[in-house]
Length: 421
Length: 121
Image 1 (cartoon, helix red, strand yellow):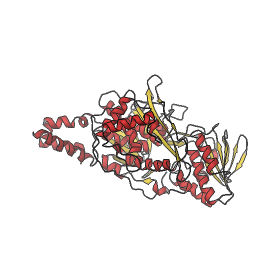
Image 2 (cartoon, one colour; image 1 turned 90 degrees about the horizontal axis):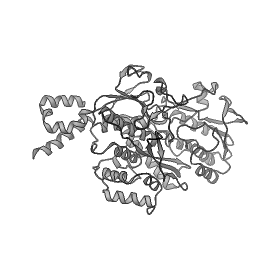
Image 3 (cartoon, chains in turn cyan, purple; image 1 turned 45 degrees about the vertical axis):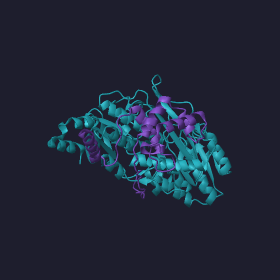
Image 4 (cartoon, rainbow over the protein chains, first blue to last red; image 1 turned 90 degrees about the vertical axis):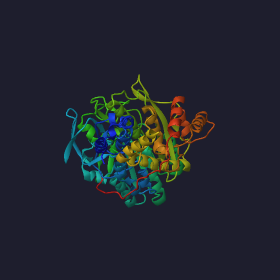
């Protein structure tokens, strides 16, 4: 039964006029309106759930998602190493919908009109009071025209959105002869999951060490140095995978031949047997449709007290699409969702959002099948800088450990439970 | 005498009708709800952990505060919590302690993994 129908029935029964009902239904009664959420990754699912809970199930929440399944990027590098299957990381959205009365639309957004407050999809359209766009990242292949076709991206997978691309890259590793060369190309920061490419290097190295020990990995990093957890990854490569990882900084890929799997940088020509190009990224397509990419034409600037776009105040942007100094991680994406959900409830109740939100980030990376490392920080809104700033005390693991590997697996189970049920 | 009974019954029914599962104590400020939800990523929804991490739900408030103080001073070793504990204010730690102490017992629900549809984009 819809809540509104329930209240109608109560009204008909005469109960709704009783003082105790008014008093206790108050939070749900005051906060009304429709919020449309585009994208059901970590940020979108979390936003939808907490918006329902914190509005006392008053706000109507509609999620538009083009895929029927949720596939976790966290842990997906383990599929390459072989300790996890993609089927361990794939889930449905049914429990989330049922538990929280979230309306679900399986469709693809084709147009967003922020003036008319209307979202158009392939099979329909919908108006909103507030819109939340949690679009993840879009891959920008404009530097390599030769990579823009689907077939090229099959030959040279990015595997930077977990799913068939992850399976494809794993299969290419399995098909590669011993003695082959795996090339991993890393774009200039910012990109989704800063430690991810280096964790991936560990996972591919783990596979090669076990099954193709004459093979090696060349990492072509467009950045001047390892972007995240540097010492931990360097030590892991040296201690666990000696002779396998050849790391080359300042190596931007200029040209790609997807058929022969050859790349050119400013300095060299490299031929790969398996070529994994993680492309440059920008805010996902729905954010582009709404015209919200106002930082370097790639990312969306927001008010960190509400995640409202600085261009359209009734449109909120969450997760990896946001321009911020924080890492583009799943934990951060859910934190954006928590702040945004609270802010929307406040705004729709005629109140001010929390002026100084605080949240934490814990990000684990696996250096083998069992051992993990982490980076952890607390972030607090700074009214002068208008940014979330890093609090003192945060930091990294001292060294990889099995204990942190166990925690990393537990982290995944708890965030899946929180975001998907 | 009848009021409290009715209140519990009807407000419980209202939530159940919409949701079936969850109820949120509404008396905490947004600041605390955001922070507690940030904890939930590792420690489970409202502090109900499925596995690995300590469940915070129902922990009495003085115990919570004492643990956080021990992480801050370093008298309690940790992999991560010594780093998080230092980033919070005393008032935030107290508020989190109160929040988790009043969370009622609740079964942890985990989503079921399923085979990937290869049409996924």
